[in-house]
Image (cartoon, rainbow, N blue to C red):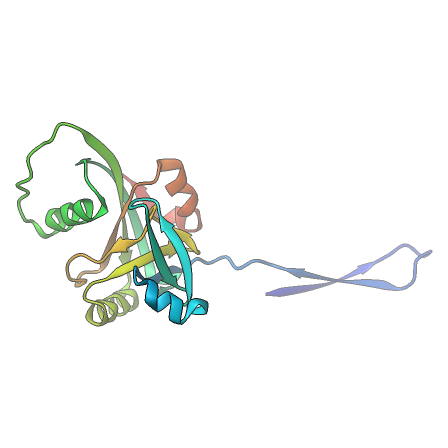
Amino acid sequence: MVWVARVLVPAGLAGALLILVRVPPTHADLLIYKATEDGEAFAKNPQKFDKVVDPSQSATVYVERTPVMRIQLSEIESVEVEEHETLSGGPEDIARELFDKNSGKSQTRKDQGKRDLYYQVTFFLSNEGHRKLKGFGRKYKDGLFDIRLNDRRIGEGIHALVGPLEGRALGIYSGRKRDEIEAILSPVKEKVTWK
């Protein structure tokens, strides 16, 4: 959006001054980018990917520059952020634990003593957002994905798709600190509930 304003200047200066002001968009999109660990794919077409070091795995991952799914702010009905304790483990263990918890499966892991904190960020979607998510789930049954809100990564690293995407919610593991998550979710802060 561009605003045009006409401003009168003092008599000693010539005529009027035209000012153009660019107003930044007031929306945020939830974007999902496909990622791969395949260095050959990157070597064949480097302009298609961004090279990212995933801090959660200390691995190099190649993220496509064009999102494979976009959910608009208007399609996000609410966001719930919940703090959890988990057994020490990598992102895949945590993702599996989230899937087991959300699907009602009992968890049989033994407590290894040390527990880490993580946040589960769940986006609840409108009918249109749900339709997009369901189509995405049919097309991509598994794989690695970079999930961003307003082009900021929600988690510290790349996410593995775990389980079917059938419901109206998209739950994401985030190893980030609370203040980092608050900053990332600031475009939708009026829709966020902390538990």
